[in-house]
Length: 198
Image: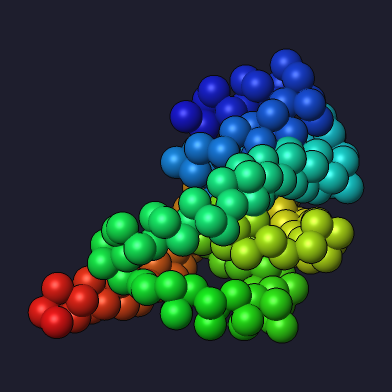
């Protein structure tokens, strides 16, 4: 994987970084934790410059984020409500809870989107509730871009600072991802069991 990512960057430069981060946002198993530090390493070695890496990575991620947002918004609240009413048990939610989330999102959506962009594992999925709950486009884009650029800049700097020791980043990000995802998975399973025991 790392060799392929490096090949794309060497042959396509900033466009390659943009393409890879777009792919990572659309298809999350492509790891930004490898893509962006490798781009930072390329910047350290003089093949690219640091601001260009951050800009290219942020651009690719934001195009992918917008695709998810637009798809969720197009899916729409009415179809989402039918989905919740039919399969709410598996979603561990009923429509009353969705309406409560919508009110919360109306008040605090900007903070949710910003924070979500700098958390491993859930970064991609922040766009879906923003689209479904019809967050206004320009605040969504502004806060998403800010959070994404911070995440991209931090990863690029880690690759630039660590140089050829960039694999150490994965050993840091891996446990951080588990810490983020683990409680969310436990919460979902608890809600699922509770809904079936009613």
